[in-house]
Length: 284
Image 1 (spheres, rainbow, N blue to C red):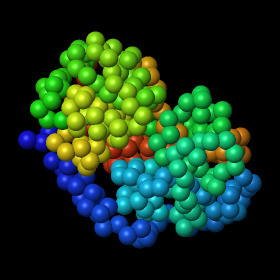
Image 2: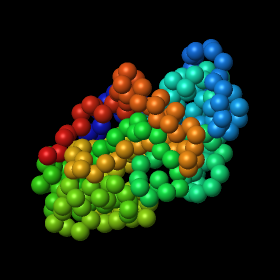
Image 3: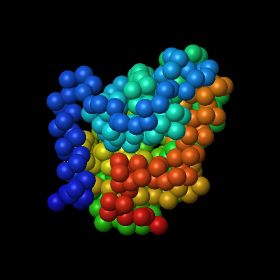
């Protein structure tokens, strides 16, 4: 029997079916908000507009139906909340698409701000700016039902099974520094390769950030479940909005994120779209 939270599973299945019907046109209306004029000032790609970027495609739960203009999804909702803090009406928010790597490479940008699960790292800061963090992602272990990970409820229980993760990721660091396994972890060039290894039985558990773990068990790894959530162990995985290096907008966007944190909006958006209390064991 599946270990997925029933309501969570239903939500994921509904989104997966909707994605199959996606024709590529943006159908959602932008959320309503302040109708005041867009703020003046230098630094915007298009005067009077706030240009946000996200991935191509953008996935649930970060963006619903690959339509960021709908404001539906964790990061789409944050983008419009930031825009509101900056004084932009929803209709003054424009969207462009970028690959993950291109957005953090050196050089000019096609966006004012880019939101697609970027961990804030010192290496990336050499090429781009980051806003204040809007989310701190924990890591979780995903497994196939009936595997050696079945029934594990502690970190000690993970030490003697084979864990896998993407090389160079926070997930890989967490295996090494938090789990400290007795069996060498298997590292892969991509999460897709790691997923294939899990499905083939080459690893017993796959470590992913918690939102991705929810998506994986709800949509694209059959008969899978979340073994549990791992403590951070001092390894930060804070996500920030990306801006061009030395952008004049960085301080403004950071101030907007800080205001959303202080007034509780970030917590509300996180609870709505990530639902991290949905029956996940805390591994200790």
